[in-house]
Image 1 (spheres, rainbow, N blue to C red):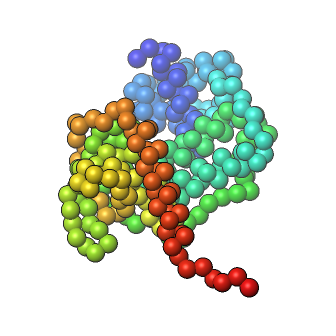
Image 2 (cartoon, helix red, strand yellow; image 1 turned 45 degrees about the vertical axis):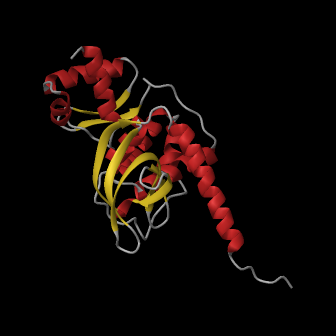
Length: 241
């Protein structure tokens, strides 16, 4: 590993988590000696990074001068914090961890005054009814959608009937009580919505539908919107006075 690469990885390690990060832990993560970590910390400080701490105590990144500062309006900052905390509340462990890391990276790129405002943001998010536990890996399903690969799985419908499906995964949508997959189902030859907690035995195939996902997703969302509008019109409405 080149020293430049090691310094980059060390900065990334310092950005993650509140710290302090001990030299021993950083050395283990990077596969180098604790002495190398101390030398690299000194180099990063010379390059402008503000790193608090010392040998025997640990190190905390206070100000990340390696990245240009970003400016946000106060409401923009609150919106970002709220959105990322919402992901922490409703997402699977991978997504929740990514949101947590993104908050730390964002804090490292903000001017000190805004970084303090972000740490003590007014808005937050909490769910009293977290989504139902899953039998599959959402990360694997997301990867299949990004790579535009068809997937196979067993699916249990609301009546308890189980079918085997092969679908083109287009998008995952997070609702209040459940998370769903929007997909093109080869069995039904139509757009279908599958609750993630009813999917089991997920298998990512090597059947590609690239580069059609974006076009198919637009069509699927338009179809679902039209269906929702039709259902709303069919509901009885109270008579106006």
